[in-house]
Image (cartoon, rainbow, N blue to C red; front, side, top):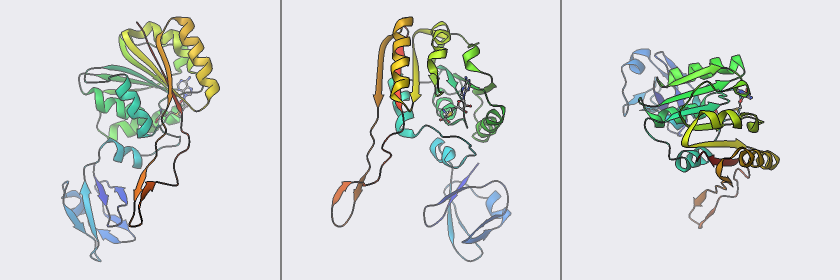
Length: 242
Ligand SMILES: C[S@@+](CC[C@H](N)C(=O)[O-])C[C@H]1O[C@@H](n2cnc3c(N)ncnc32)[C@H](O)[C@@H]1O
């Protein structure tokens, strides 16, 4: 797995094959024989840097047919739940597998991620994406998570689906004491229902957040927040089984 980056900073995921762009082509031998850090030259002399992709590079370029959670939001999930090596995570729905990739990347070979996806076509895309990033600790399951959670002793149940409250009872049974449930939802009405259900079922430390993320631009004229930003992505709700 490799990424080639051109002089404009544009990235391309490149398999073991001849590589063509508007900057000319690079032979298969050059591509296959390259390693991270090398600079390859096209037949017209344009330069491409070889990079070993990190999880964010990979997610940016992988196949997908639905929206994904952005680093600004997944970062809070990882930090707030204290996710680490050896943790057991349930992720639903999988979508293209971006959150499953982040979780798998963090929990390492001692940990395990089970990711439920109700749509078979999406589950197949996610399986290809997980395989492409060479993660062995993520299992994609073509299953409706509202019909139950098979796994036990989980550290985290993460839900990115329209009605997360349908899964709260199963999550409570499957989580370890001290484990977290976390959900990502675009609408405040979803947050209201979810918080009510979490409290009713006896979860502790129920909290919701929105992460407003604003870039800063540095120019010759001055430094200020960027005029364009993602105004809203989703709300994050957390609760703990204590
Ligand atoms: C927005 S996508 C998830 C994206 C994913 N978290 C990521 O960042 O890559 C929501 C997914 O949930 C799936 N889904 C919806 N309801 C589900 C259910 N009851 N069980 C499993 N998957 C479900 C949908 O098919 C869709 O692929």
